[in-house]
Length: 110
Length: 111
Image (tube, rainbow over all chains, first blue to last red; front, side, top):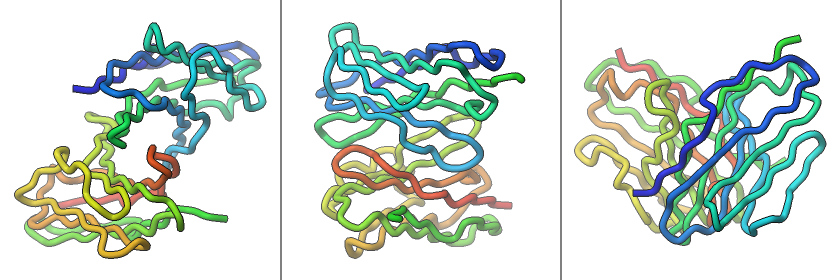
């Protein structure tokens, strides 16, 4: 059975801090790993990673994949209160099935 | 601005009633997913389609849930009969192969 594990489950930081969120996986026929941010409503897409070692970057957010060790990290630098959300990791397989982790709840305090 | 559209946004129904949720995926996306989200279980995959063909619905309780995609612009998720434990937010998502973009969800409450 495909498995995606995120850590930590929750995290509280202060504005300006840098955070690292982790996602490890065990799936059959890995195709890609995706990161999402979920605030009150639907998850919104952040990154899709398919190749090891290539960093994807968007503003203060960046992510990298290690297909040998089966994990990915999401970094957020200079955090702001607007970064408070649940961050979800999902792994997609060649069969087209996408499995989500339980998420990391990030709280950024002013 | 392409988006996944779900209706209704909120639904309150009595136990035993039939519930139908609808999803209009982003035009051109070939894969459509139905997820259910609760505080206890997180995001659970119920079913997904590629090019309108059902690929996997093993996440759904088969006796009461059914998912169909009658055409490329419409996916439906039906619960009959509904039960209080079905109360959750149901998301539809579409993409090219992988899950990509989510709709705003249908919040279902079964009383």
